[in-house]
Length: 633
Image (cartoon, rainbow, N blue to C red; front, side, top):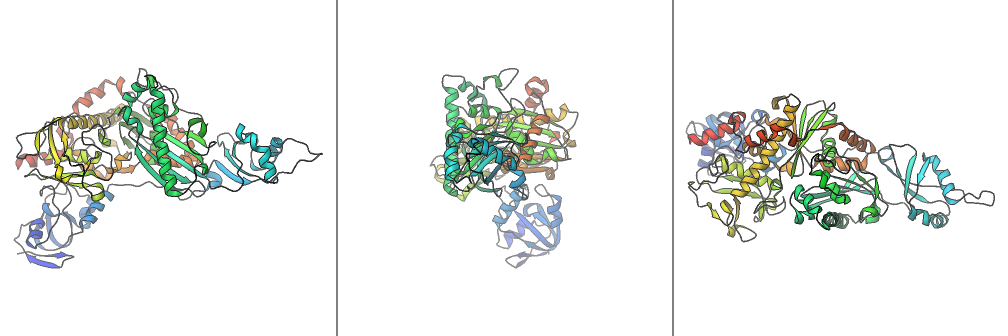
């Protein structure tokens, strides 16, 4: 009989040959987490085989590197001889499952404001006027600035009004803050004449349809001082882009939506100011990215033409403005740079995201997907880029779902359903009682319901399942994830048939979008070397679950890279470096936009993808394996 030693407990027992590691763990009086009911789906029973003889029946959740390192799923691994097994702490397993799929892009470490930053601050020594030198104050300033490579100076009227006093109060040695236009050498804008040297800060803002995020940055050393994110206040007037465009066309609707996003930005600014101690008057630069509709609503530009054929925005390239012109509560003459976009549904957020992902500087053929209310997709490398957009709706961000919420404390972020009892176990952000389900939790839940037969391939909830959790609720058929006694709200948390339909349509739109895009350039999915997943929500997707529902292609897992909020990253880079800003502008001009509504194949692909995982199961071999196992069982 094989003898098995478990660490760190240092317990040794004898077991029957052919026992699984799970069997041996139970016989030793130990425990590993198995929320999927020993079906090999969740990866929570991960153990490390330090020595000995085992046979892995399945490596579904394991990479080749995992297997080579000795990792195994306890429920799917048979003991064929003596072995030494290490059971990692559950917290370590959870962290490992996340870190294995997450790639983190960083702000560059080689930041040098002397040549990268558009803002410059210095003290100038100006010869005072005399009877023999009676030039006006502005002329004297302009003459001295030539030593700082300024041949054409723009001075806003508020500063011109105070120039006389500031020069004399400083005894003709004023401090100046200038914004240099790097695309036009020699041109600069005087934006402040402070009494003493100031701390130069900037604000990078990503205006998402559902969430607005911001980084407060130190422009002297390139570090992030503070960051914050919260729901876009415009949600109260429409959860998706089209709803807001329609609302904006109504009386005072555009002003209302513009005011609401400004209020959201002000709330974020209040948060970062409070946590950092920085004064709003020290914020001298602002860069902003968002999809075209969000940018139009922020700038209070009528967005109606974006949704009407031929889908033309007012502008994809917005001029620079001062903060006071846009009612931003920072230094009034702070320079506000709205980053450029490409087309009506591929905007600055995607151009910044592509740059943040490094796609536009890579030799590898890559597919970039920003998963949000809209699913924007870019295919290409440093030589060429094509792009499209598909409406996914707000479901993946927790909106438009009965018990949906954003990924905050109290949100169910992952769910497992036992294969026999159909009882769920779940993980909650903040380890608190659940208040709702966020996007990643919805994907996980739908995948588990499909794998265990709670829903069929069309997403219909089965009332024949051996569980009381499937029932007819206030909103139609539903599956209860958490009963009222378990929740923070004191109400049942469930997923309804309507929720499921919304999720299936959202995943189908994304899958159809990148299939059409790849086919448009004569390629196939197998030709793609990397899939880069952006968006704040994208960082939390369980790729196995996304594949199981047919949201992502069934390709080698090592090809997926999760990048987080690439739009905010790219916007932050543009705030720090004029070269990054120019690269984003170049990317916006380089991308070729494909309008999916004009492509007949998109509807065909979308319809085919409105099943779990797809009408063609052959293109999802790993899902077929699970499906066949369930049928056999």
